[in-house]
Length: 295
Figure 1 (tube, one colour):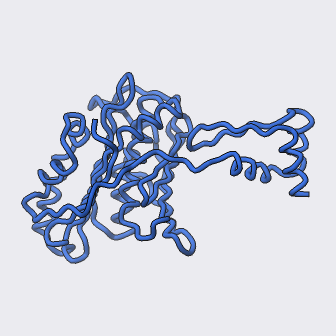
Figure 2 (tube, rainbow, N blue to C red; figure 1 turned 135 degrees about the vertical axis):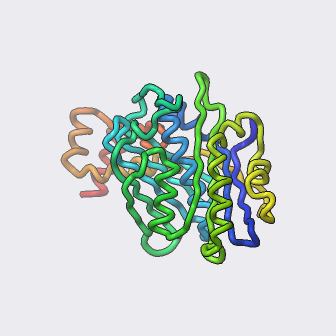
């Protein structure tokens, strides 16, 4: 199995930007950490790939993208945090939810998410994060993020994301983002050609499972348009920076009264990180110290 990675490329003499990623291992880790159902694995895996693709065009090393979907479907929504540095984490509100396959024999992510909205916040590494919100088009993730790019960033884009869970893990996961840059935005023949090529990428994840590399898939799609791969593949991984110190600090938000109840009634506290599932314990002495700090 190929390692999780991201590659960047240009085509059409700089008129097209393309980014591809393999996220199989990190999606499998998320599935294990959060005990995700098949449809929840598909939803979160697609969203993590989309987050990494969005973060790939940012500039500052500490830049990050936060992607939130809120819907009326049984999953309730999900959250993904992805960085330019190749790290990503995420969670689903109701990871145990399972649904029958749709009429195309695919995991029904759209129905699981339901009607709602997509919010994307970009932390550029300076100033306040820039946040945009759009209504969900299908809930299938790829189309929704492409809609966001077209309407919030005025960048015509095609985004393909997919996940193939198996009984034992994840067989393949990843995504491909292709964008028309301003210098080619009026080139109608190029746009029509690209739309035709992208329409044949509905088996992108299947190609990954069969062993096709990202370079091979990009070459098949854009090879005759002066495709140029930029640099070496970037490693990707599931990573959460939570720690006992951060979790203890978070307890301060509960206030004096609730902290006192934790001490006298519960004889301690347990905190679970939504993003990675790690659990942290605070004994009475630690709670008394936190209580003293805020009083």
